Image (cartoon, rainbow over all chains, first blue to last red; front, side, top):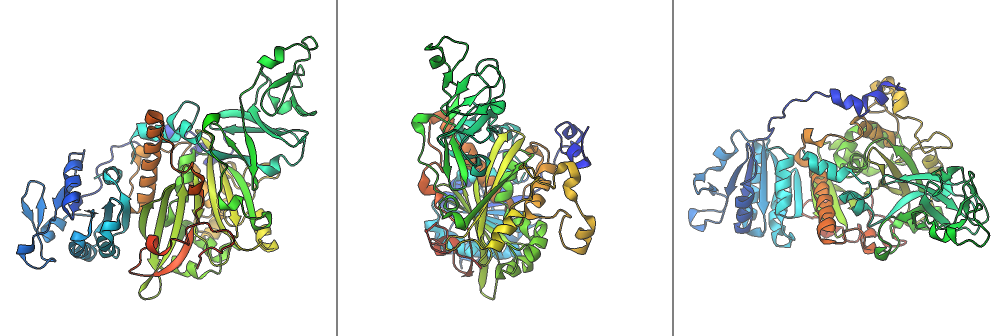
Length: 162
Length: 428
């Protein structure tokens, strides 16, 4: 006999009656590695159990023009335009280990903000080498995980059900 | 979401479990000092980390925390007579000292050595501040006593309460590092609670309901920074420290005392929430102390003689739908503490984290779970001492500051998030 509705509803026995249905992956995530070391991490975690996550690199291509005009690359090397990549996306996770991608971080962050796409930044390593990248991401990233490691990136994606 | 095996790893703290072993590396609150107010005061039942214990204060003022049950026939020593420097089982008169050593078995011959071989499991119990702390792990690895600032400022500057929370420790603790719920669940309290209201920071809180977060490792755990828009070109930051395994602080508001919590597993379906308020630089005023006693701020109004909140699941938390409609409370439940507890308890004794749909704003929780899991496994597999055992990790503070937009809270708040005796907290 329970003293109240709340007491009954919070009991372990009542947990059996919670509706159980498979939870579909909720996010169409795009993971962008801004620099070479981040790209290595992206390649490793891309093997995870992801349903809707797509991984991209964004390494320096100085011969291609201004730094904010850049191409992304799928992990198989196929180029992808930022506009195309962001289509049908609702969360973008940007990974950085140093400042080499700061300008691109700002451009990607702005593009996401303009399209109302939630942005998360994962700064791998001690973060000291990525101060400019962090500053560029700060206005746009709903969350910045600082001094993260590879497993944090993996756990973030898993928790988001991508 | 969390895999079921990881959820079980993080939520089970009984003897022999990885998280139980992790908690046993630390000094943790066992009870409030007020529960054993004088020598030979009545013993108190204490269940911690799924172990049933009895706490008492002997005739010399020594504190003891020993197995609840008499070694003879298993009667509870809660019925014991606390007298003559020991706790005597009233059934057949066996008597124990604060170390659990049996010192008298009346049925044995005078001068018998029988009782020398009878010793109950016992843990140290030490008063630091208003709290009696225990260490339930290997005595050979017993760390130095805790150095959290709330327990070290002069008594007139600090106040600690506790309340029974009817859910697993992890879902209670996770509320402590989840800054995004404040604008919703506690919005009424920001305007009316005597320990919260009137601060400039509250205006930023209410104007910007979509904070941005930055989560950074610290030596002892994490700092979670929640950022909201302030005046043009600046951000209002609220910085929450977590020290492993279960110590969190709430960012302060104005010159109000600063507060926080220690979340202690009773068993896998119940926990103690210890809630403290202190001011680093001045005594609490009589009005502040009375507000805390009355259950305002992070404290709760408890049923007299108990540590169970008056608003609890058995009375539907005294929910007041009219107050909710009038906008006095957001959820209809009064009081910051019970607003949190009502929702955390509603999840069930141990929430099924395989069914969660987390969002990037939950990254503090995601990272904390990850750190707990890694620390528990490193301890189990390699004997690695976890973060938060070193007392240097305890000397942290929460902070609330306004910074230029270009500045990182980590770079700009180094002093603000360190506990420095006598120096006021950084608050807006």
